[in-house]
Length: 208
Image 1 (cartoon, helix red, strand yellow):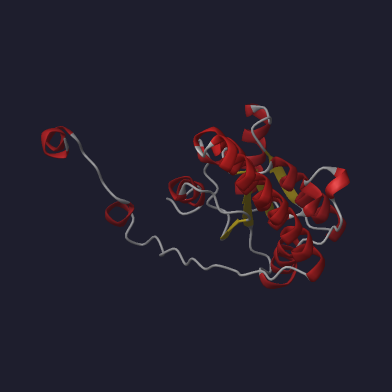
Image 2: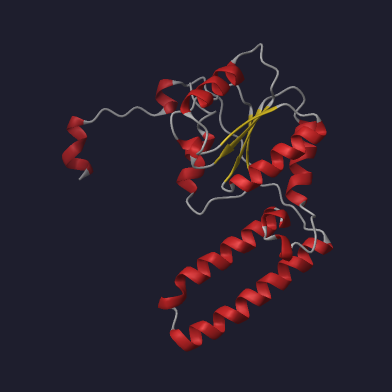
């Protein structure tokens, strides 16, 4: 297919168009859960595991695929923050990821602007609350934010005169038509299963 269509396509990479664009530097920041958060994680993992194995034994894997995905999703939420769980399951409120991110935003980035992506809109709400408590200025939008409001926030964030340093964006909403080159740092608060979606989100910043 590539051979057939190649004569009709013009494709230029960023390396060809903008050789002066600096390379992306990527790193993984490992976060060790507190004992309380780890205990909650282990408890939920064991509960999900025993329930799933029993159902799979009775009904087979095919009928329980959705339950497997739901179980993984719940464990991902615990890793982000136990506050994403139903109230009756929140045996602790520790979130090592939130603490680590706030430390980065407050002490290590200086005056640089940063984008924070999360797949959970509830996590963005929690981060917005934490930014407010820490006195960190921020913009915040997800899939429910009207296009006009998005455009205003993006325009303000891109302005050198604007002092808002942090942009909180849902991962899915951050993949369409955004140009946020004013940011020097991008944080993926929770990795997405599709790495291409992550790269598209990062490239809202790493572009001409």
